[in-house]
Length: 235
Image (tube, rainbow, N blue to C red; front, side, top):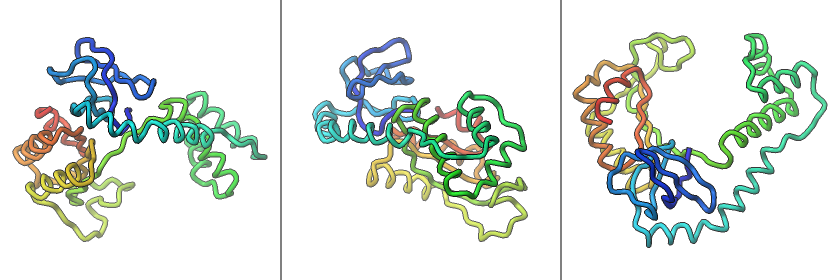
C-alpha cells in the first residue's frame, strides 16, 4: 500500500523501487523503463502508476508536508485501544485476533452478533490498531466502477446473485472507458476497480479492450470477477 500523494524514488533494484514519503519509505513494483533515482512518482497498491514532473510534485508535497504528520498523529491516537470492562470471552477472541490466530466459526459468529455499543467500539478499535500496526498510516484510494449487476452464479451471500430480484443493468464498453477517463481526469483517481457479476456479455475481446484503453490513463486497474486470467493477458 502507498500514499495517494507523490513520492520520490530513492533506490532502484531490478523491477523494484523504494519511494520516500516525508522520511517514510515504501517498496513498490516498477514496470517503467524510464524511471530514475530522484524522480517523483505516484504508486498505488504497491505498484508504480506513473511519473510526475518534479515541479508539480514539489508543489503538491509543499501543501501536504504539515498535514501529513498531523494526520499521522491523529491516526496513531485513534488506533490506541481504550480499556473497558468486557466479557472475558470477547477479550479472548480479540486477543487471538491480535496474535494472528485463526478464529473458530462460533467465535466469528459471536463477533457478528455484538450489539453493545462499548463492545462494538472495542472491536473497531482493535481492528484499527491491527491495521495501524500492519500498514502504518498508508492507504489505497480506489475508484470503483460497477459496470454490471448481471451474474450467472447464485452465491447466497451476494446481493446480485442470479435468483435475487434486482433491476439489472450493464454498461457498454465505451461507457466504461469514458467513466474511467472522468474518474482519472476530473476526480484524480490513481487506482480503479472494475466490478461486476460474472456476466457473459463481456467476452474476452470486450474485456481486453476495456483494460487496454484504461491502462493508457496510467492508473492501477483491478477487476473483481472470475475473469482475472483474461485481464492478466493485458497487464
